[in-house]
Image (cartoon, rainbow, N blue to C red):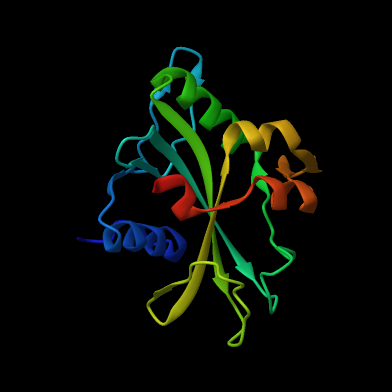
Length: 171
């Protein structure tokens, strides 16, 4: 399958889906739909796990520079207010058969990392780890990160509480 995204984080996630034979649709971010109250930010993928809600996935690529995943520290998990607003709108429009989530795709920067049993995905000579946070959980615990850049984040302890490996969401 042809990779449509120039973003290596999205390509890694897409190839993970292909490798695990999970049906999905990638969304062209350049074609933003207009709703009656204006434009709504697109998401990245619709993912169709077997016997579960359809996933509205917003992929967020970050780097992990730590040496261990054991304590789940060192994970940047900020998003924009536009990301939140867009996913909220899409979940409202698409209905209860859909669940909006953030897929945090972490590029592993160090060669020797203790993955503490986490699933690792090798793609194009890089190594990635995927974590998901449900939109509703994110909204419950998010804190303002930067008013200037209109970003929010999860405090570290809330990220540890809410983040799940991608396999928990899709299998």
